[in-house]
Image (cartoon, rainbow, N blue to C red):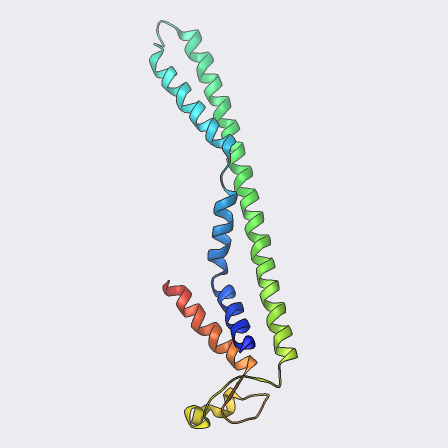
Length: 161
């Protein structure tokens, strides 16, 4: 029974790994410096709109330069953040893929001659030999077959939910 649960859990993790990655990134995306720069920019732009360009040209231009400098700084921070998020996404996706692949290959190797589930042979009648591949006991579902079944089912569920 634990083999059944373990294999099903691993295929669920594999099917929902993109959602897991997006949850991890959601926690890592908040950058207070970008938020403070954006609020500072809004305040400066509000102040700029109150300064008449005709009467106080020097003050207007000076504030405009500060705004441009802050925008450039904010854009640089946003680009760096996007690059950092892309790296994290790649590393987490690769790590998840390797963990799932390694654990499935290990479970296939260690339990290649065990059945995950035992059903009456009549239930699996025309396809019984496919389900018991590598174990050859009628009515049994082996590890490779269960991985294929649960992976297909969880990926179908992941598309709809």
